[in-house]
Amino acid sequence: MIGNIVRKSGRTRPTGKGGGTMKRLACELGAAMLIAGAFQIGTATAGRDLAAAQSAPQQLVVVRVPMNLDCAAVPNTPGENALLVQYGLCGHGHPRPDSQVCGDCGCLGIGVFDVGKGDMGSYVTISSSIGPILSANYSASWYNNNLYYSGSYGDSTGPTGSPWQSYEVLATGEGYVTATVTRAVDYTFIGPCYSAGEPSATTYVTIH
Image 1 (tube, helix red, strand yellow):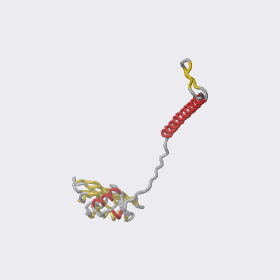
Image 2 (tube, rainbow, N blue to C red):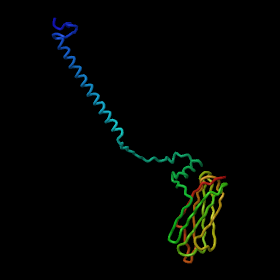
Image 3 (cartoon, rainbow, N blue to C red):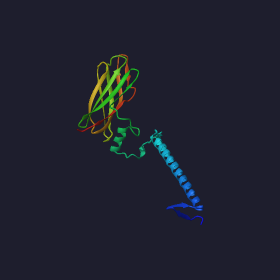
Image 4 (tube, rainbow, N blue to C red):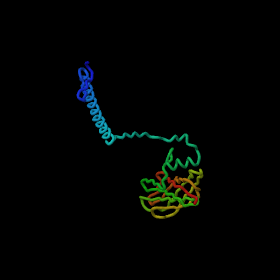
């Protein structure tokens, strides 16, 4: 019968349409092996491409936008006010221990530093560019940004040459203290020389 398996001499062999089935199965098996090989090649290639992409330098795009403090929402307390001074926020300049302003006849400077025990040292310097200083005077004020304390001070002396200097120790209490020269004048042979601005300086005063 066509399609049966005939045993002869201890071996089997396909006969009739059964032989065609075996050939078709062999072809399908070969095709499957080819597809599997192609898949393995494609997978390996994709893996290499992914590894290369991961190892390649990436272009990182950084976008920066400004962030501003809402000054109206900051509580009006000594602690917050001192922080505003410390970081130069909401109209407060960054703390600096000295500053100077100059005009066409000289310069005016102020410097402050911590003395300890709630005291601050302040020195004011006036220099002349139009000759020796015969006499000078100034007025200044200080403000404790932590405790809301304030005070005023000043000095006046006779002939000193140039520059003219004055040193004061002020009981300000602990905290960030700002001192400002509000007025200064020196007298020379040519005439008086007035300050061209109001220099100010800030330091932190300790109580230790």
